[in-house]
Every structure is written in C-alpha cells, then in structure tokens.
Length: 74
Image 1: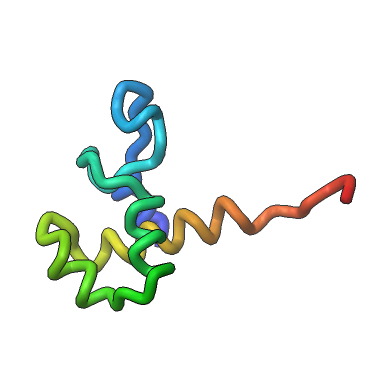
Image 2: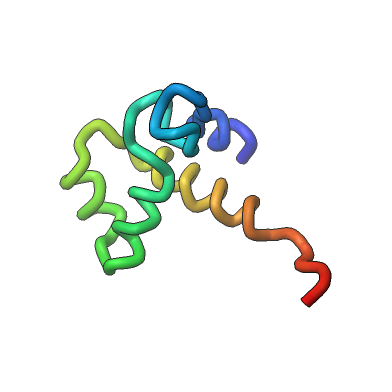
C-alpha cells in the first residue's frame, strides 16, 4: 500500500501545493470529485487517459489516511 502513496506528489509550485498524481496537474481532489459525482473508476480512466488504475487507488488511500485521525475538542 505504501507504494501506492508514492504516486501522490506535493510540490509547492504546482497546484498551490495541493496533492497531485505523479507530478501531473491532476489533483487528488479532482479524482475524488469525479468519484463523488458518480463516475466509476472506468469512467474516470476514460475521461482522463493519463491516469492509471493505481492512481485512483492512491487517491482514495491518500484521502483515507488524511481523514483517519482523532478529532479533539468537539
């Protein structure tokens, strides 16, 4: 799984420092937004041919890891 996360890059000079896929200007949030509106993995790969199936998995894993922390002070 950790090799999947190597597909996620963060460059302060690209996309405002937001996490991107393999140095491209495709943000993790772009992939998540496409899933959120109901596109399947196959649809996304067809829509964005520069992406690979592992890029989609990496985006989901990255988001999951970022959200999986305790919330204190609620």
